[in-house]
Amino acid sequence: MRKEKPYLVVILIQLIYTGMFLLSKAAFDVGMNTCIFVFYRQAAGALLLVPFAFIIEGKDPPPLSFVTFCKIFGLSLLGITTSLNIHGLALKYTSASLAAAAANCLPPITFFMACLMRFESVKLHTSSGIAKITGIVICIGGAATMAFFKGPELRLLVHHHLLPSHVQLNAAEGSGSSSTWIKGVFLMLFSISCWGAWIVLQASVLKGYPSKLRFTALQCLLSSIQSFAVAIVVEREGYQWKLGWNIRLLAVAYCGFVVTGFTFYLQTWVIERKGPVFLGLSTPLAFIFTTIFAALLIGEIITLGSVIGGILLIGGLYIVLWGKSKEEEKERFDNKGRSNLNAIQDQVVIREIMFKPRLR
Image (tube, rainbow, N blue to C red):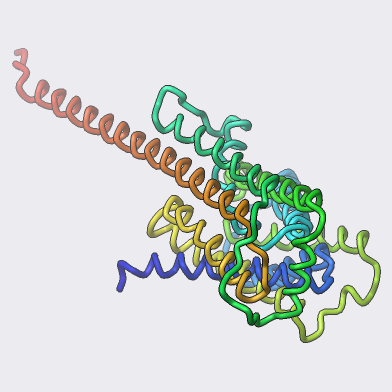
């Protein structure tokens, strides 16, 4: 059972993300403002993470300089506030299954951002470098397919949905303007690009402030303040801020507490035991789960273009991750070779000293 545990955990993680895509889409379909949703979600996450960070890392926290605080503020603004607000708007224009499929672009886009910022390099004369570039191109092709080609609708053999009111909304959206769909796809990609840049830039900030849990909690707190400022400018109608016992409250509580709090711990647990590549390989499960449950629960329309685009995105993701794993494997082999060579050289020196004729 111990060997199977990481596999069960990554399946649980992707199921949690599936719920996030579905509940967010359902809340937006009933008219919830996307900016208000982001604020409530981040406020709930901060309510959970800030006390937890002080309890776990309360003793001797690293000093937080003004420059480091400004960097964390900028990271929160870019990778959380901006990314989540644009993602919410894109999800309103498109579908939950497309959001899950677009999430597979994150590793290739992150690698591309790292190359632009000189944190990564591409060796075109190696198979791993060629694989990375090929994977990025395939991901771009998948995104373009989802944006510009819908194709025939693929209907499941299901006629009863748990949320019938959303079926009519999705049917109306399916017959809507294609320009809105294209706009939503590009907004989704821009949101993921902000997220990728946020991941890359965190590495340099964490060197000056190595307290990871406090770092995460502070970003969540700052993003909730930033999101409130955005929401209050965008929406001033009082009724939009009311949650009530409905899908809005459920979506906020789920995304704030379960996704932000519980999933953060699960992902850290998986990375510690199996590595980040293993977690990345499980990402396509969210697309598969979301596509099936979106059709069953909220009557989301599945098109051939979305399926083909999703397959291309998953294929590009796996190729990039394969190239990355091969590169890391080569680095480990080279480092091991250098260590062995140094050990042999040390042994030779020791033997020369031991057996060298002594001068009298």
